[in-house]
Amino acid sequence: MSYRTYAGKSLRPGGGGAFAKMVAALKAEGKTASSAGAIAATVGREKYGKKRFQAMAKAGRKRAQRNAFGAALMRKG
Image (cartoon, rainbow, N blue to C red; front, top):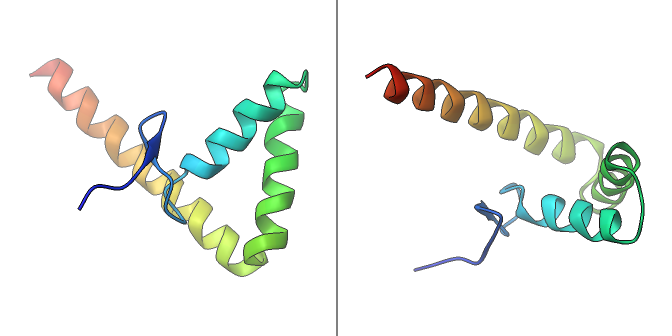
């Protein structure tokens, strides 16, 4: 089964794609990158609640670190 993606990220909850898509849309409206991220985070916290949103953010940071580490190993390789 294939899921939709945006900028290489899954659009499923916790995948980061919906967040990235909203940030891109806000930047297209003329918002700065930092304010667009802040607005998207606020909307995410309203939708999912503080506890679940923070858990998804933690998982995203962990996934990004793991992917960066794997990419660094492949470059050395």
